[in-house]
Image (cartoon, rainbow, N blue to C red):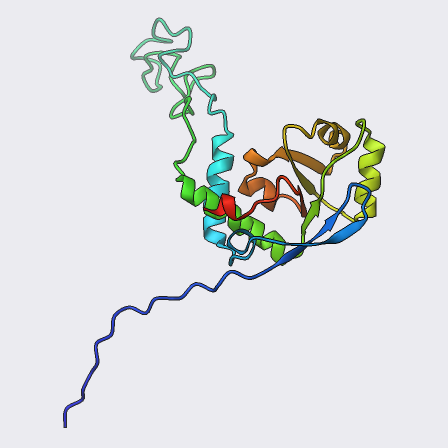
Length: 225
């Protein structure tokens, strides 16, 4: 009796469908105006942790200046003649005091200027950002303000808003270039960071406990395409 085996191809793991999530919407005084339905393709994904780690690592590496430099034995001064005679001392022969084992000598295999940047495709950067936003949305840490209509910049006004919204921890406020009053109001608060909507990135989202958008800066299906 022979056994019959059926050959099957690799089983593809289906990605879960984006979840539908909402975020509370408030005015600049802290009064709740209702809720906003977040774009599922941006805020409803299953977070890709390895992807976010890779993008954040590349982002932090790009911040390194890479200007550290040490001198080799060719670049240090001194050592123009033998420190002592070739023979008769009982010690090992030496040709120059610029050798690495001498005080003030050159550094062997020391760091030299280099670039630490890593190549990350735009699609990868965008996917990591959407994963980070989806993670904050799943934790219900995304909030929307209709618009910043403060007449003049005041730190006291910004503090009153955060207290009215019961926000604690690190807060990332996504603004536009026209929100100068809000940017100046949040500037002196050590736990608040403002960022332009066009510069929103994975690291800053993951480094914050709350992400605050406005009606104008909230990512929609237009940005997902």
